Structure formats: C-alpha cells, structure tokens
Length: 343
Picture 1 (tube, rainbow, N blue to C red):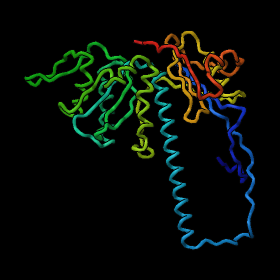
Picture 2: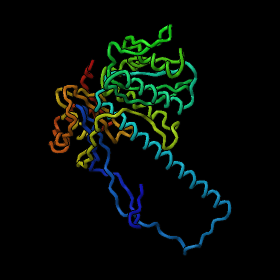
Picture 3: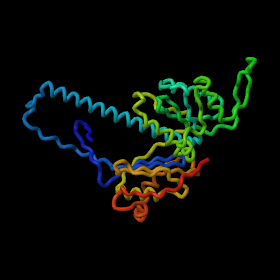
C-alpha cells in the first residue's frame, strides 16, 4: 500500500499493536468490525543503479510494460467496483434495519427477462403502484439474475394488510372497488405490469433461505443486500445497484483506533453484548486477522450510537478463555444466543 502526499511517497504497513474498529448502531442493531490498523511511514527511495537514462527499453520491452500497466489499471478498476458494491451492500442492509421492515417479497418473470434496465423499470412501477394502494408502504430492494439468466427482485417491506381495496373492471366495462387478500395484491399488481400469467410475487420470499431470513430483521437485511456484491460485475459502473423508498436517516458509523490484540477484542466485544442482544453473526475474516460481530435487540428502537460501550470499557481478560480455544485466533469458538423471532 502506497500513497503520495505533497509529493512524498508513504508506505502503509499493518500494525502489530493497534486495531481499526468500526461501530454502527441503529434501531437496536449493532455492527462491529475490527482489522489491523495501518501505519503510514515515509517510504525509502529505491537505490538507483547507474545514471538516469542509462537503460533504454526496446520496442518489445515497451510493449510488455504497456500491457502490464493496463493490467494494473484494470485491477484497480475492478477493486474500485468491488468497493462500491460493498458500500452499497452496507447502505442497503443498514437502511432495512433502521426502517424495521418485517416481510419479504420476491418478484419473478415467467419469461426469460435478461434486460437489467427493464426489470428495474418494472420494479419501479410495481413499488409506485403498491404505494398508491397501501398507505405508508415502504421498501428496499435488490436485483439478482437466476441461473437461466432471467432477473428477479428481492425486496424487504412492511407486512401487507389482510385486505386491500383495488379497482377492477367489471364485465360491463365499469370500474368497481373490490377487496383482495393482501397476499394476492402483489401478484395482481406485478402482472398488471409484466403481463397476465407472466410473473408472480411471492410473499415471504421464495425458497428455504428466504423463509429462514424472515425470522430476524438482521437476517432479512443480509438476505436482500447480499446480491449486491454477489453479482456486482453485472452492474455497469455508475448504475443503480439497489433501490428504496423514502425513510429514516441511517445513522453514521464511528471509527476508532484501539490498542489491543484481536483475541482481546473478540472477547471484549462479546462480553459487551447485553442480555437482550441476539448474536446474528460472529466470524473471522478470510485471513483470520479481522473480525465481524452483528447483534440485534428487538426491544430497542431508539437508533442511538453508544460508542462508550465499545471504546471506554476496560478489557475483561477473563472472557478470553471462554471465547477462544488454543493459541491462535483460528480456533475461535463463539457460543451465540439463538436469533430472536420477531414475528
């Protein structure tokens, strides 16, 4: 990792003593992550061999150098696309948590619809019409291509009412107001957009994973947002990766720099969960040098950020043995509480 600041080259090195910690809280949910902090030091200039201009590249060497530069540039562009997708995933997940959605919808096509722009336009029209029919309708949605190539939509929404009044054309050509069960309204609206018998709206989501995600708001948020990074390469640069209705402002996260080992931090973070917290996710990173903890407390709904719970409490080393086995963090064992059922 290198940066140039005011014409000076700096090199980033991972700290052996400090962690970079990010804390986010909202609507009774907490996300805490830790990774080695980066210490930036002035880089030493490599020794020059011979006078400037001593070595001149021939045509073949210049071609190889140009190809390498292009590969490096493409790698940087790919890394930037992935970072943007991860930021969008985080924003989508946290919006769902703050809004407190409690139901899943999955919009599918019978046709093989591979046009991303079309599915986004169809979804926009669907959500607009649902908002016209249902007061205070809110949503947050992501898009996913199926194995056959056809796109479909995953959305977190508020629970649908038992009945919804809709206008329906009678046989004599007149319009009448009829009441449809809430679970049928989605399909009726969706088919009015994509065509009769050309699609379905699955209330509660589609498949076993969706059914499981409905047990927890945090899991629901993760279910809808995960597709943003799963297929990020299919979304052109600058294009919308997710969509949502107007809603509450999402609290900002706080960044901290703490002097402690990852072992201590894991024990520290777990020890600071309250009795009402359900641990939704607790895991080490791919290289076992980072940690992520996600909890939810359905009884809280104030959306405030209490940094002191992470930053100001002393480390209780007695919990380390309870959370770790062996000598390395690779043997982490977390006895998580069962996820609360919000329904």
